[in-house]
Image (cartoon, one colour):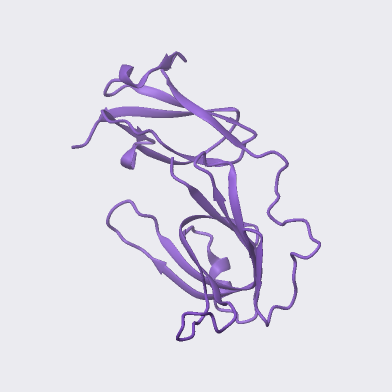
Length: 232
């Protein structure tokens, strides 16, 4: 399963497709730093939604700032790897992209310029930053006492009998059973990685055997699939 990341800002949550965090120092002729740390902008590419007015309002205002963070998850899709936190942040670039070919979502590229940021134990603050929310404060990234866990998955037939992958045939209607703990309300992406069959979910073929953003409803979440002939 691939790593995942999400952007959390102003009570909004977006899936992150790509992100870059850049810091640099100018050097003298001998290759030694001759300035303090520069840049510190956040480049993030997210999946667009129908409720993205927030980002346009933010972009078109020279005074509006928000606090937020980008959370990176481990391969299980639930456990936190680390957070990139930022505060007093301006949006200085917005570019929305659409491509009618393929299954790529509508995307939005943002460049964010925070007054202060914290990542991997380091705090980087601009000289214009008005306040430091990271001083003597509870980390803003803690949302739950228990970390959600992905325990695994298996297949079952309509009667609830467990199926091995080699028992599944073309046109079989089956259930993907996702096992989790403390994860209700989360979403998960799973690569089924089947070399002999493809699968349909809600009438659509899964691209590269990957089922995306399944909402977790309990310790076991059942998802109906149909096995189909694999594309060449």
